[in-house]
Length: 372
Image 1: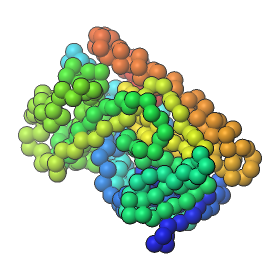
Image 2 (image 1 turned 90 degrees about the vertical axis):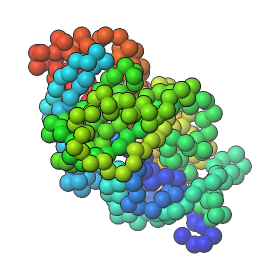
Image 3 (image 1 turned 180 degrees about the vertical axis):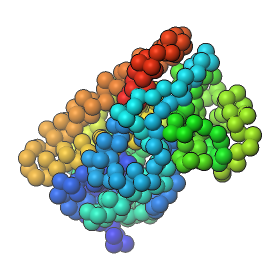
Image 4 (image 1 turned 135 degrees about the horizontal axis):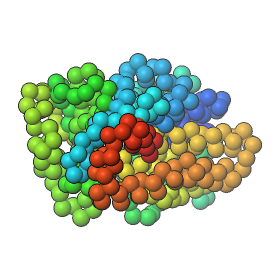
């Protein structure tokens, strides 16, 4: 990139899973002249539970990066579930519900390496400040230092606090805080989800990243800012992990981050602009998962752009199809999350686990949670 900037057919703000997936799929469709920018250089750390669902694994396969990711991941084949009433169950959905945990520093870097295989121009340390407008359409963006990327089409994938989505509706946030430890005992190849009343309707977790290292965290809602995240997390750890953490070694400090979500998928495009991933509030309202949604919506956005650039479709039609495809792909799951959150406020999960001595019931619960 020259000191003054660059020009592109497609320019993407944000090189996380959503932005990288968009760039990879554009490359797989034969689209050239793509610029991908990020405020950081890679590899870089990213605060995230780093779990990838079965749907996410399928999407990584579609992007051609799964073999590399699989080698760097910890396989998950089961779940330790703790209900709001304190009941405990170990469940497994079998191979169909297998997931992974892949540290975001690794996952995002592997995705970027796949991007660079298509000769996409990646510009790190680019802090996008504002969009460039031209006669009512988005025509690129400008950095804090004055550099510009002018583009026929701009893709916004810059996460929860995006300033460039065009969606003016009030945001809903899930708050998350987490830490890392070495030497915490856990059942091999199992994640843990703990539905405690202090977090209701959300949950706490333990996700193993290796045979010896885990991340533990909580997610909760606090629209009135009544909770101190560190105090709440400490209470959760004391209640559920005090004994298991006694001889474990903490790795670094606790880190928090917000997760933007919505039950109803809003506007995801305007002239010259597509919004992808968490920037479009495409995260799961019950599990706070965003990796799969970012990857899949990135693929859908690239397919819309490919149709326009190849002149197989007009922009307005292709962009409307993208938004409709996102609704078709995610809406049932998001509305199901609303039902799940309502159920967690009742004794239903305790009743299900109490009845779950039969393997068929346990396996059904595991598959349901893996594919929410």
